Image 1 (tube, rainbow, N blue to C red):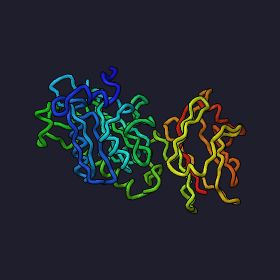
Image 2 (spheres, helix red, strand yellow):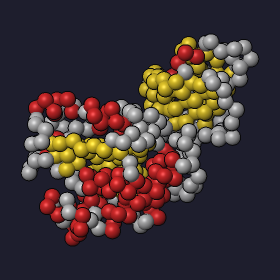
Image 3 (cartoon, helix red, strand yellow):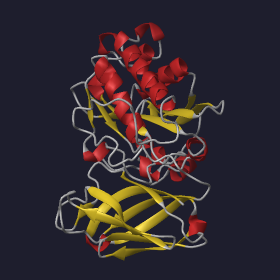
Image 4 (spheres, rainbow, N blue to C red):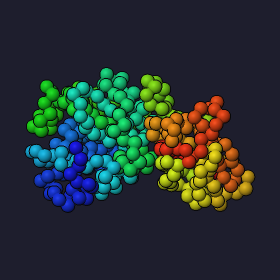
Length: 352
């Protein structure tokens, strides 16, 4: 069902805080944020789930809660249109973010998605260890949109957990998720505590392992469902102060670029017959670039003919430019031009 309101700005202008909805926050400037932007009566059980995770990990919290006795679904604004200023301010100031949502379904499933690959992998592993039915989220709720508010943190990615109706009912005694029951902690089941423990454990493992690289995790068994780490080369250790970090979104051969850092070293990014060409400026002669290229959507870079650019490497490079070669396979003799990429998102890091 389509949202009644196109944005949170429109929703808040047409409703009353404290009557229709409320916002609850815990803001201690922790590096980790837990959110439930569809809490209260909107997606029942989200508030309680997010609250317990926050408490167990001593993290920060944002909840938007529907307070109505009926029609709380009218207060749902999809994540890509979510411009609530408190949420935007909090998420953009955090390194790690776990977004908890509700999904339809009469089978208990925790759908795992988001653009923070290492975080979602590790939380998924911890959920499975505790007997919870965690799966890679279907495309409609995988949470890989760049403009999803949940992915707007410092690392440009979150772990988004979409809990089915049955999964959320299992968090409360006798499956009773009525407001009078779910708000009393004595009705919270061991399943809810196992869920919260798994999320906190996953957060702490990633936070304490590779703090500067959200694409890696030392855990290796992910059931072949998530593309673990892609082509990260963590053996590269020689870096200096000139760093380029950009997000490249390609649609029908046209690239949209969002710089995280280092735009002062880039003239432009243009298509090349071998892949993607990045032209440098203000870089000393003789500089050798070190490159990390990581597709961050689950399907990678999809070509117009339906294949995938699964192999990326520095094809040509010097102090003036780098060409990132794109191939379907390592052994292929045919390169894929950027003009042939139909869709995909990648993070590119270049150390000069």
